[in-house]
Each structure stands twice: as structure tokens, then as C-alpha cells.
Image (cartoon, rainbow, N blue to C red):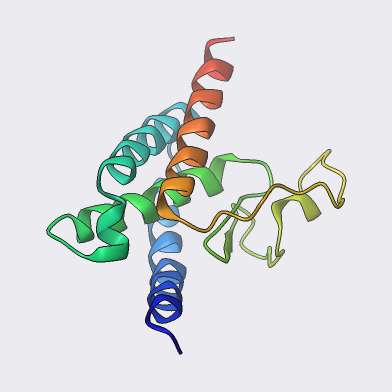
Length: 139
């Protein structure tokens, strides 16, 4: 197995452990608070996401921000989130490969977005969700 594939596999497996732990902690928070957390996490990932790929002194900080940001997004986005080959959702029984397969009001279809495969792409999705939630709370 190539080193790059091994790194991705290790990242995904550690996220499969860490994201649900963060979800348990964030579950009772208000959506606006989760949006704030997601926004802060996206900033950290955007600044230090390279450390997840290449190592460095910010690797642990970036990983925790990634796991916490995914948890906040999974609890708030209808149908959860798909990232880096994993799926996380507020519904503990959900095992869907794509949030579009089970989200309320979202038809399953072939027009799914491109898969999210890098920490910086995850940061963008988390930031977009946080922005959306903040605007939705204000409305």
C-alpha cells in the first residue's frame, strides 16, 4: 500500500473514533453555538491543514479541529456530512454512504457533489455550513 493511501486510511480510521466522541460532547449545544465551533475549526484547518498531510507541530491541533468541525457539521447539516471517505450523522443508526440518500427533502440522485478528499476541502465545507447556520439564525 502506498504511503499516501496508508496516511488517508489512518486519518479516516482515527476520525471514525474521534468524530463521534466530539458529537457526544456537542450534541446538547444550540445550533448557533455549533456553528461558531465549526467556524473556528475551519479556520484552524485552513491554517494548519497541511500538517495533517505532512506532519509538523500543529498536527494534533489540526486533527482535533477537523474531528470537532466534522462533529459540529454532522449534528447540524440535514443528513450529516461525508468527508475523506467517512460519513457522520446526527442519526446514530445512519449508515448511508451519502447524506443525499436520506436527507429530508433531498432526493437521491446522480447530481451529488464531488467527494471531499482533503482537509482544506473539509474546512471549506465546515466554513460554508457555519456561515449558512449563522445567517439562518439571524433570519
